[in-house]
Length: 105
Image (cartoon, rainbow, N blue to C red; front, side):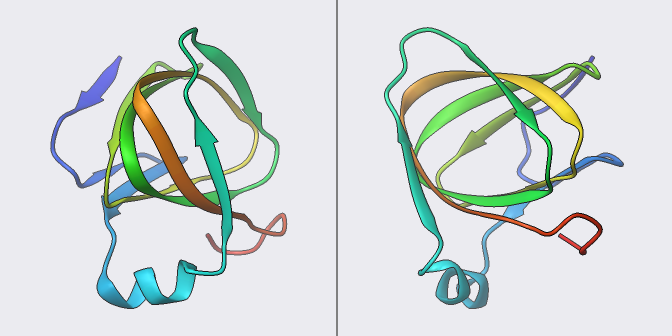
């Protein structure tokens, strides 16, 4: 199992960095997602997706053994065909965008 507490993280399927001011401007029109879940929930990323955490904290446990914590100002890109379980630690708000299959994320 891979676990990272610093903000820069990368595997062949998952990348997390701090959002830059330029990226913050570009993502302002992305779709908002909010979760207050008290129970963990599964998700299947069938397409590449990028998201920026605007508020809150969560942990994502992926089926490949990777465990990723996400918090405010994290910018995350996940490549397609990976499943995970989200555990919301503090109510979370993300701005996200799915990428066309094969497009660079």
